[in-house]
Image (cartoon, rainbow, N blue to C red):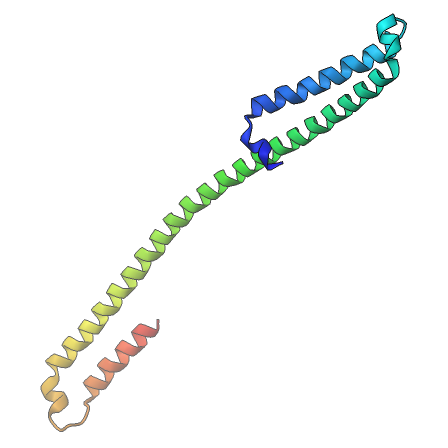
Length: 147
């Protein structure tokens, strides 16, 4: 059936409709025009051929319409995927912005703590003991980073 994808859809529908019409005409000729000498002689094969063509045509018509329905569904889902991808790009950009903002805040806090330690360097190194200011600066930075 993959070879049918190589044929244009308009050609396929033309062939399918032709099979249906040929089957319908052959069936009508076989059943209703049996009294005509030429048709009467070939009545049974014409009826069988007409019914076979009609059944085949209806079967192909159903298969073709099902294929077109699935193609329409696929096209619809592809549109939804494109919309979802656009939304995902927008959401990713927002998340990226939030992450960068948080990183900048963390660096600012770290720089503030470093500056506080530099300013109080002499007090901190005076006795090689940590003063209360150094401990509170360190703790305040730790507490703020956890939030």
